[in-house]
Image (cartoon, rainbow, N blue to C red; front, side, top):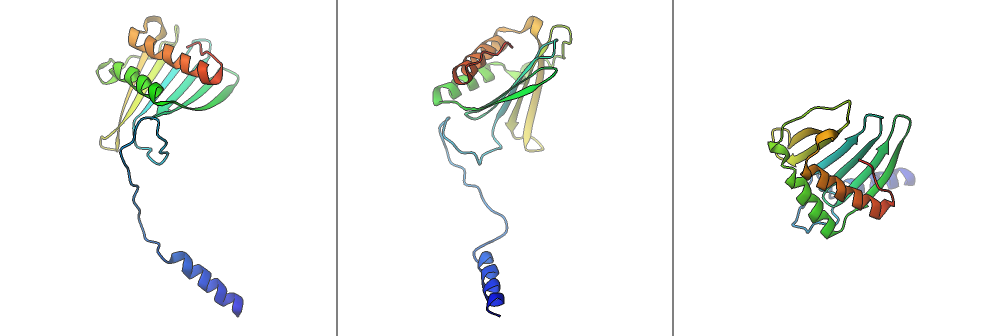
Length: 165
C-alpha cells in the first residue's frame, strides 16, 4: 500500500509545473558564441566531387563546420570544428561573395568533376529557402576558388589534413 501511494505521489509530481508547448528564447549573439538550440539559421554545404570518386563534404552552421571525406570504397567523418569569431566572419563573407541566388544552376560534370554549393536561408514557404548550384571543376571561378582555399586552410589547421578539392 505504501509503495502504491509513493508511486502515485511520484507520478503526480512529474506533471506539476509542466505545460504543453514551449518557447525557445533567442537572443542576439556574436558569431562564435555557442547556442546549439538554434537550428533554423543559415546553413551552407560545400561538396567537392572528383571523377575518380573522391569527395569532400563540408557543412557550415553558424560557427560550426563538419567535415567528411569519401571515395569509392570508404568514407571518413573528420568531425566538427568550432570556428573562432574571425574565422566565422571570414567564411560567411566568402560564402556571401558566391552570390548563389544570382548564379546559374549549373549541372554535374561527370568528366571533370564538380563542386556542389547549397545554402539554406531562413524564410520561404516551408521555413527555409534552399539554393543549390553546381560548378564544374574545369571552370571554377575566383569566388569558388577563394572559398575552397580558405576551407582547405581551416581543415589543415584543425585536422592536419589538406583537402584536395
